[in-house]
Amino acid sequence: KTFKLLNTKGLENEYKAFQLAFEVADKIKYTLLTNNDINITSDDKKLKEFWEARKEQFKTSKQYTLDIQWTESKETEVTDKEVKEYYNKNKFKYTDNDGKIKDFNDVKEWVKEAAQVEKAKKSALKRYVQFKKGKLSADETLTLDINDPTLSRELWASIQSKNKGEVLKPKVIKNRYASVKIIKIINPVTKSFSEVKEKITALYEKEAQKEGLISLAEEKLKDIDNLELNVSTFITLNNAKAQNLGINEQETSNFISKLFTSQEEKGIIPIGSKVLVYKIIEQKLISLESNETDIMYENTDQIKNQSFQMNLMKVLDKKYPTKLY
Image: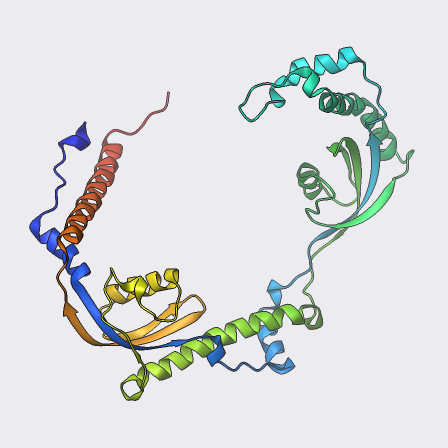
């Protein structure tokens, strides 16, 4: 109701401000620079210097060596009564895409597996006690990177909170229980240059190309008055996408946005992995068609209305804080 009381129709000077943006037309001379314009060479000396400044970013993952004692659940015997009781207690877990609880017969096999896992917990705890006392040996020893998907997130969270030599209570992993003893904790170390050379080379070339493009663009801009470059037709907000500037539609939108919000006669505009160097050589105002003017007025009213509503809500929210009951 409050919003309806607001008069957010645009004023004449507001319409003129918006209209000017659509009426401005720029003719530019320009050149588009890409990575093909840059010749990048690399050798071990350059790569090692690049790596030295960033080598702390290239470390091995923290690792754990673990003894694991498994308790299977698939051989655990459960009666039909136990399966049905489990379903009645946990039926909310078995729903279709519409959120409706599935019929017991449709999910019986899944329910049975879950019931077996639940019943096997008692056996897993007994084996855990024997494992902890050294009366039961590990089924396997694994060395894993931290958060390796072999184990569950829940189990990794427990492992990270424990110290070497500690034994963790059993956790479920894919329908079986794992009791884990931490044998060794291997902290991260910086990788050698040879280990990361391939990755370093790609990063170096990307960074060198970026710096090379900017450097070349600055040279072009400095001498742009003496260079014979491409010359566009008059560019407007409406015809920008039809311009053949050598960039795609999205890149053109980005370029035009920066061009028409810049107050500089000439400049450098990065567009993704490309750089466009330009100078405005002529500028004029064009007249809008009546239907374009109507659309522009509508856009002005809409933007003003959204701005008023947003700011009004901020004021109201400060004066009358929202309460949840």
